[in-house]
Amino acid sequence: MIDGKKVLFSGMQATGNLTLGNYLGALKNWLTLSDEYECFYSVVDEHSITVRQDPAELRRRARNLLTLYIAAGLDPKKNCIYYQSHVSAHAELAWILNCYTYMGELNRMTQFKDKAAKHADNINAGLFTYPVLMAADILLYQADVVPVGIDQMQHLELTRNLAERFNNIYGNVFTVPEAYIGKVGAKIASLQDPSKKMSKSDENVNGSIYLMDDPDTIMRKCKRAVTDCEAHICYRDEQPGLKNLINIYSACTGKTPEETVLEFEGRGYGEFKIAVGEAVISVLKPLQDEFARLSKDKAYIDSIIKENAEKANYYANKTLRKVQKKVGFPERIR
Ligand code: TRP
Image 1 (cartoon, rainbow, N blue to C red):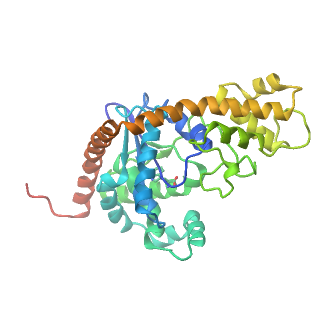
Image 2: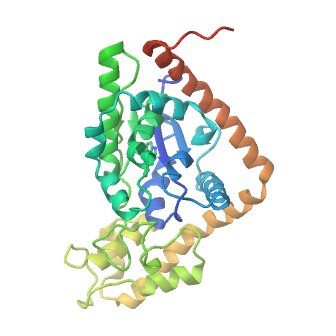
């Protein structure tokens, strides 16, 4: 608890360009949470180097992501938006937790297996202990809730196990976090293969609408979206491509899927796809404009980075000092 509020923690990697799926499924919903929770949103740049990165590019992307959080409407005075690498407690707690994590547990992580297969030439120890750093992220802030996608549930479960294991040995040190199940955001699928989720790492760029796509590109991708040959607008699993477009249109306009179907009943797919494109453009254009404006204001963004790093360090170090004492590190002499 911080100031009577429960704590929420989440992190995003600055690798790949964020998609409309990230926005409608996650970021947009984060905006409503800061009244109820004390929120920490980290740009997890330390996780990013588990695969090889170009340094200048990583720095640029990390700053863009942080700026984008703010452009999307997260108030940086109410939400702690910061770089993981600016808070050394993350790495320090991760080391300690590594010593309480079993090889067998990490061997079971499906994301490790997937990434090891994908980066067979660089299966480094950091990739293996990635989930432990993630546990440190969450436990440092004594987070009560963590909004994560289904792909991160296994890591969250490990985090809970580590917290309980530690608490069993040393008393109540960590809050055991829960997955945040709130109003779930819209699940957006690839425009080219509606059986897959829209992903920032998809090799087919036509499957994803990126937050920084220009209006022509957005319209072109919507027009090319895979649909079916039923030529009849309805909302059902047998027409997954169309269903996905209805979800996108509904999420962008605030309508329900049923209202959307009524609105376009009897009209052609071509016409509907144009309406989807226009709806997406009208959501992304203001976001892009705000991003462009903020990106030019270097002094403002720098001040946010500095202030929020201080805030994050304050809370993180409080937990870290407690943990260091518990495991038997000597007291600091002041
Ligand atoms: N591993 C997460 C992902 O790839 C990102 C992440 C790092 C995270 N630390 C976190 C998410 C802590 C939630 C909480 O999506």
